Image 1 (cartoon, rainbow, N blue to C red):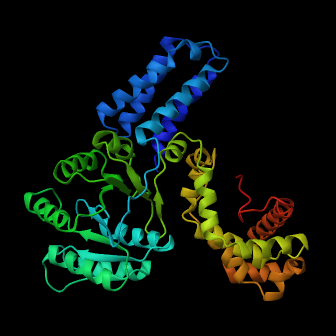
Image 2 (image 1 turned 30 degrees about the vertical axis):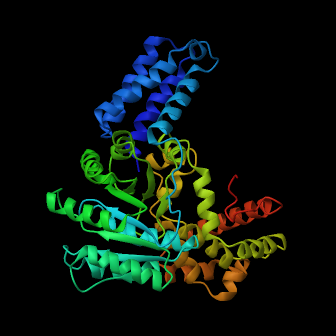
Image 3 (image 1 turned 90 degrees about the horizontal axis):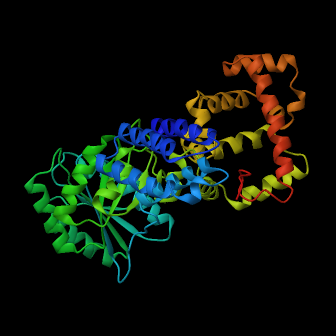
Length: 439
């Protein structure tokens, strides 16, 4: 996510930090490079122009030019302006009043509406709501079947009708929700490959009949300015309430994320990066700005850890560490919990400085964890619990069984000892989230 933009901005920041003194000329030179980086990332031309103008107005002030660290001051200004560009504050779903509440997902075909609908259902369920997914796409073949399949993965029920009256389906679903105590309806509406009058008329009919609490425009983050253009057209026709960015794990340049809120004036409410049901994140402008500028997002990382790792297992692990009983089985379990938090490359973007290491070629594809699993699974229970018995003969047998080398087993044992030592140190009053992350 935003790898190229982050890399280009890091080059600009390195130059700014390297200058002992800044003046209006070299600030302007740096901002021209920032502008070029934004345009290369497919940020809307007018949005990039206004962004640079606002940064320049603050950066050439006397307070910055006479600062001890003017380069850092300019970088902070860029960060603050990017937070403002993305929306300044987190915006929640507005689901007040009497249930059932209604969330309507709209967008072009292929933008990820059906997948988002299921992810949102799982998200709301985890936060104590009783959602119901509604198959409101009567045009795309197998759309209803797809939503049922996704609903099963999300453990959220789906309402579908055999007829193709979309407004009728949504109205029936609302009555079903009332009878079965489902407090939130999520409507998976139809999209098209392009915007047409028939699609908009159908969506307006659903809006008028159901009066949804929230209409969310689903924007495919990989389509760049096309997503911004579609959002503007949907806003004009439907006046939606918020935006969801999908497919942010792709190789897109990221311009849609930095443009769409400024162009439409509507807040980004969620961001999705990955296919798993749990890969939906509430959108926080300051956190994303930190990721883009290479400052990390430790808060989101800790939240992921807290969602994935239960306190009981953390306490049990802490006791094992204090009594020196940490085994390869515990080591394997800890690595699995890290894997459960999401794709490793996305986790690295949340750790300050790690995004740069990833761009320099550090492997984050998860293959190393697969290799660790294979090695540990090739051991006997006694070897996993007492790794000190692993002599040369046992290591050669394990290497054959796991398809690895003795050298790789030796490397694993070194990592195990290092992790055990580190976690023993961290367990002494500091182990609060299972990953020993700074709070």
